[in-house]
Structures are given as structure tokens and as C-alpha cells.
Image (cartoon, rainbow, N blue to C red; front, side, top):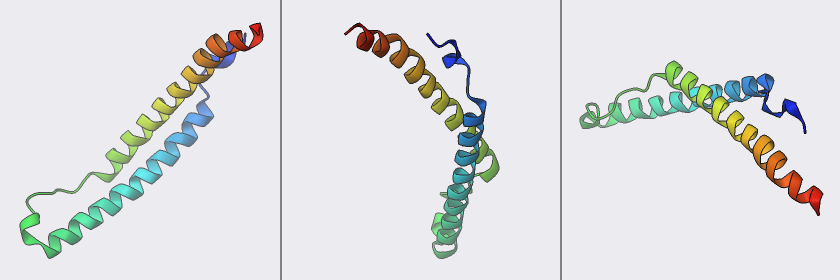
Length: 92
């Protein structure tokens, strides 16, 4: 049994966080751009929508993706593969 499965792969977490943060920053910026364009065209819309904070939203989304994807990987590799599939496949 491999004991290193439950040690987090920090390089993977860092890469996932960087990708998620940059993609979230881009999409949040585009969303704000579209909101401001609609506010300029439709004056009644100005009170309904507010700009989304780009940096805090991007960082929060990056952290969420890094943690959740690493947990999914740890559960899949450590619990399902090692504890369930390996014994089933090696016994047959």
C-alpha cells in the first residue's frame, strides 16, 4: 500500500489555483464590462446591478478550485482506487 497518496501534491494545487484565478479574473472582468455597457445603454438597469469585485472574487474562486479538486483527487486515488478497486482487482 502506498502511504504517499494522502500527502497533498502542492505543485498541482498551485497550478490549479493559478489557472482558476486567472480564468476567474478574466470572466469577472468581462462580466463587469458587459454590466457597464448595459448600464450605459439602459439607464433603468443601473440600479439593478453592481460591479463584481474582480480580485477578491478571482482569488476566492482559485482557492475553492484548488482545494476542491485536490480533495476530489485524494478521494479518488486514495479511497476508491486503493481501498476499493485494488483489492477487488487483485483478488480476482
